[in-house]
Image (cartoon, rainbow, N blue to C red):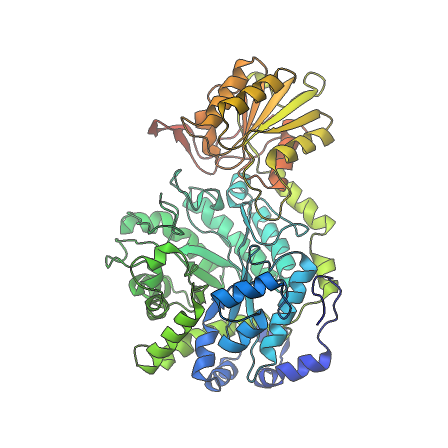
Length: 607
């Protein structure tokens, strides 16, 4: 067995590929790009008719699997697979359950580096295509950019959705999708669970927040449609999520079961437009939300299991006939009311096509099999979803060319041109909210020594971090003498005292803030730094709402994420290398009186 970590493994031979795909290729005689755009349903139906019931059930599942290689993962990953899935490797997973899709995660060790990812993808395809009636696998991941990214450096990482919302450029959103899509496709990932189409109107939203383009449904709709066009123009299926809308909740559906109290009329006006825009843009897949919307379905079921929402509204009212994928079935929001064996069956009855990441695959797979054998689900119902999944695989070219090459990785992933595009987009997102006495841009002559302190939350996957270090490094490259001192998200009195002492030796202080609250140590830190009399520049590295808690700072910027690309852009704005262009995509209210808006949507200063 070869080592997939080397990045220079041989491609499956032409003969292997032809033998493996012979049955499928015969059924889907290649007809060039036109075939990809308009797959021949009769040939896909013929494929479905030859599948066993077990193969059909498998085709509906998208599963996680541990390991960097399809056949030779590390022993710890073999152990994790045996414990959670009852198989040793990705190849065994595909052989045993005939899964239609696999989802990559960094924590499952699927995404170490681009060449390894390409090898893993090829290994998965080979394992599936060599089976009797083998079909290509649809490999997916959550690459939203910003704070959620499963594939890290050296792939190109872009600003997240709220930052793009602050930039307000449809062209930038399309470019992001085009470049990110080309890089994912080069690594064998053909479905991206992005963009987030939720309209984030609740500042307390613990799960969406900066993952949303903003609070204005029209602006969100335009950016969703642009990103979809970018991704799908690069041959990657985009996925609008989380239907029917997750933007107004203060409960995280990973850990609880949220309820959205919007009226039907408010839902139509606020939550529906971005999904309508995605459908109009030809979106390939839509992901469900594990939350309750009583105005749309008063049964108490989560939307993922709601036939009135998924079939009645999404399919019939909105006219969507693409793939519907559940959010992860391991999340608490979908497991609260029903057991793990009922959930997949109810999801299929509601109108779902792909069942994502069940906590216990054997239980879920057998539950669907039993439901068909006992007549609760018809085989015809399964065929309907399988046909949608196969249409998508055909459109994405998986029947024609399931494998990727190392040369393709080198041509596409993390190129200088791609990284430069990400930097330019980031520069247009940084938002200047406060600039008293024109403190910014910060003069290197007047303030040569800069202390960078503040929150250092765990770095979003794949970026270098920590934020204070990245900011200090970027300011150093711009001609300042910059020192980093991490004070954390909850600084103690001793830590604050240490920062105040260090600030007395600096000409200016830059403080990275992360979700500041009224009684927090972060707020005390900023106030005590301001009390030293030196200039203090706050950079909100997640939610822009921090500015409402920091009335004493002379300058405040919103970066919307603590990824390297956004922090480096903020440093260039601080130093005056670029002017701030961003405009708030959400309103910032007074913390003690939410009726009072301090900074409205569209607010943003410049030099």
